[in-house]
Length: 331
Image 1: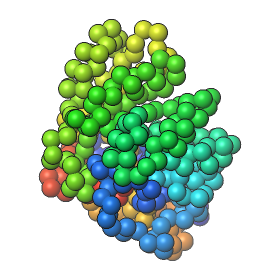
Image 2: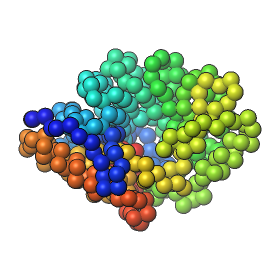
Image 3: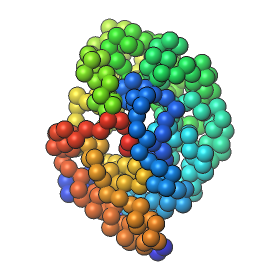
Image 4: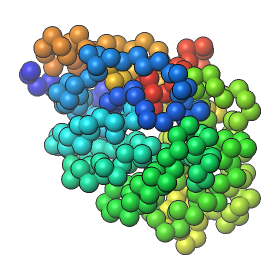
């Protein structure tokens, strides 16, 4: 394939896209109650799953268009046996400055050394409780001790930016805020309390478990009156630190606030569709081009088309176009 000319991906509302989230699988080894039902349909077949070569091609073309950040997601990306190789391939591209992944941590004990060798920059570790029974209830798997041990291994690893993702739910784990904040005392991590979103196989979204960012903020202030405000990012809307703590605390109002105006990302599903908006259910299909040895320019044109289709306000324009699980598009 020829090399595409370098230029920026900018949508019709002047938002520059420099970040891609690539789902390397839609499978997951947990069945979290707010994400995927036990009977969730596995839609992607082996034939439709993006190959390593195809993912490398996608990254090369996007890097030529100004994308500098890549995050591998799933499902659970560590289920992909070549995940460390994919990280290594991303790191080989000098235009890509940050390579990360999001994981539930269950398989991190067997993959962390290879990820470190491959040059991983950042890991987002998702864990919603520090109680074994609650973990079993939320994930439907009795794997808390292994996951917690893997978290401790990650926290002891140098040179990896770590974010701890915690979906807070009323009367489920909302009483554990201080236990999670304790991690920021000795570790330079970002602890992120996240709102529940309506992508859950219709399981618990309408059962009163939703806890808004404003309510989480109230609970934080009640526990820690000496919270100090930091400048937050687009998604980490509220950001804080505590005196004597190495890490920071962020709130992600993923449902109550609209981040569309600052959206800088596109998503690639594990079966090769470009999703330019979280609320887009169809996307544009890359596989026909990838599997017909199309030119880089043809891929560039499809990415430009996808970015041009980004709505100004996807959350409100989508209405009822809501996915049943975030595993379908990789978080």
